[in-house]
Length: 99
Image (cartoon, rainbow, N blue to C red):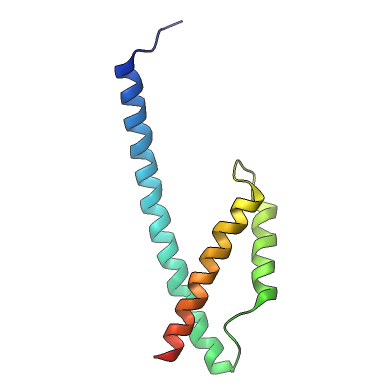
């Protein structure tokens, strides 16, 4: 078995961090796409006279995601991430509605 030396570990760490940086860029792009789509939904809701907040829809989203999740992300963490994401989208829809 090959012994791992500190310089090898530093290289591994650097590569893993680069991978995280690439993933973060993709997540950022996807979050902005989601928000843009959410803003479009807010405009449609306003024209239809519907409220921005739809708790049944948000529950449906969380339930659907929980069923698709294969981990290692825990259900409670998944819910926290998406509840926060939906809250940001909701607030942005309301701000856009006020303009």
